[in-house]
Amino acid sequence: MWGNRRVWRPRLVFWAGALAIGVISVAFAKLADMAQHLFHLMTGTYGGTTFVPLIITPLGFGFCAFMAMRFFPNAQGSGIPQTIAARHLTDDDDRARLLSLKMVAGKILLTVVGLFCGASIGREGPTVQVGASLMLQAARWGGMAHARGLIVAGSAAGVAAAFNTPLAGIVFAIEEMGRSYESRANGLVLTAVILSGLAAIALVGNYTYFGESAGASTGFSDWLLVILCGVGGGAFGAGFSAAALKASRRIRRWAISKPLDRMILLAVTCGVAVALVGILSGGMTFGTGYEQARGAVEGNALPWYYFLEKLLVGFLSMVSGIPGGIFAPSLSVGAGFGSAVGQLLGSNIGLAAILGMAGYFAGVVQAPMTAFVIILEMTGSHNSVIALMCTSMLGYGTARMISREPLYHALSRVFIADAIRRKRAEPAPLAG
Image (cartoon, rainbow, N blue to C red; front, side):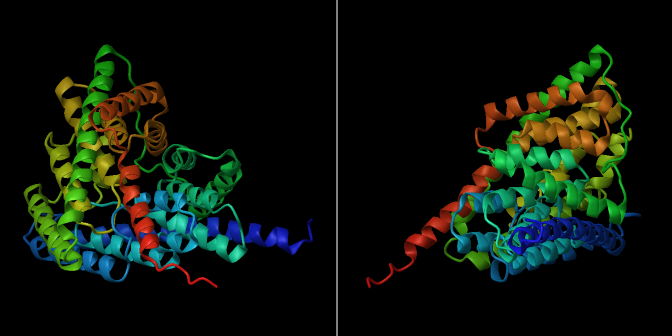
């Protein structure tokens, strides 16, 4: 066995693919941070907002929409729905339309451009599609079977490397990527997460994404905070999810006659609105919202209305059709909501921020285990584990009462339906 090339070649290719996910995720993160920094320098939003975003942001949105429609189809949005759809498809050509090396290049390029023009998007969701694409390509080169398990493994590795959250990567794979998770994929997922995580740590070191939070739930007011952040955050998250699904359906029907022209028009219009809100907020709503969320986690209160502004620009960026994820913007919205509730109750702002993130994020994606684990690992809030669990479950329960459809799975059905329609439209093979 030790000298058998057929045994070791697939393993080596798989390991190389997992390491590549870690390296590319780090490079993606650096490019994304650089793009945001350049946007703020160019527009002056570090020291006082100018009106430059009214030009840059709509043009950038239009460019991203054009490139996604013309050269990188299926690169729109976060990439998680495409990855879920690819896992359900059985035809290799259908999967290749959603997960490929071309998609890796397009997703990274256009997400970075979107951040460069001030879009309220994140790189973490796109990293899931990038990771799944790289792992599926490694499977093709290595002659490996179990494509579905490899897609899940690549997705988990992407989450782990993007946030430095290995446990969240595993939970995400089980809870979000595969509602019918197969136990035989355990080894693939664990190996991919370990190797991609090691590659990322080797390049940037071990870190906590949002720093350390010392907040801990101690008194009655803190448990009132749990209830308000869970129920309120879940309601806002479900509202965002339901509105995004309804808007995406209407946009598809509206754009069907002239898809390229109308999607570019929509993207430019959304870009103008994002620029206006960003200027009115003093530049706080541009980009991922990472700095605002980290500040709240560290105890610095945000303006009470920040979460409403950030929710609006996140919604506009999502429905515009440009590539980019909602992970980081959603966490920023949640931190803003928690900060507002914390100020209202006179509670610890850091604790309120992480509970707000848990409630809102669980409401958006309807994946409570992923929500609480990912926030636990990103903030090091080990003193608030039970409070985080309760808030996530309250957010999830509230969201289920408002919107029955989990966002990513509902969006994935569009790509599955497109693949089915394409198959039906193909001419039948001639009889021999």
